[in-house]
Image 1: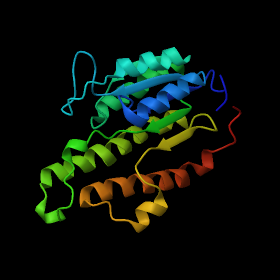
Image 2: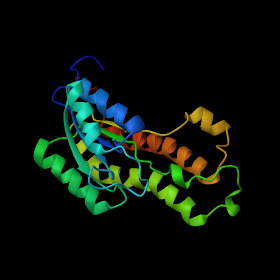
Image 3: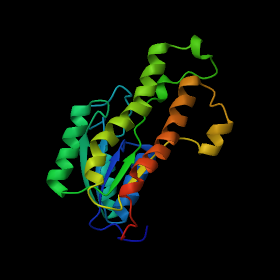
Image 4: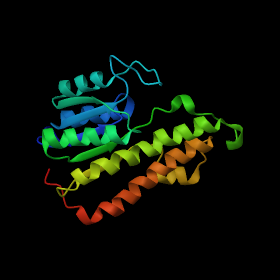
Length: 202
């Protein structure tokens, strides 16, 4: 991206409270985009993850970088909340050009170096829901709007390249599965989006 190369473009960064999502949202703002930043932690209410970072702080970073930011509290496991978010983007902007799926928030659920059947099943399944189901719910709601115009971009954020994850065990059954599944999700979405793809004008 070059300076202001995304002016007039609308982005949704799902899972923008901290980390990579926050960094991506900020850089999209620096390139001039209007960025909807979502997550479960706000100044008034934290998620069960109970970290201090908030979507409002991310929005302030986007604005400082030169973009337009709209923070929206969303639990991406709740389809109604996600559909409401996408409906708001459509009402306010009439378009969606970039979708970034960076939802995670499962660090507290990871059990390292114990075999799958020795781990807490509820925690493992919760991790898979946070890491995989959230991405599916968000794409399902957002892609009809994104594909109305050719040249939209979907970014799936995970940990480890396909080559690395194909060859390495990630030291926890549930963590390994979560990270590999998101790699595959990017591949399958690329196949399904191919008919509506076209070179981006910006």
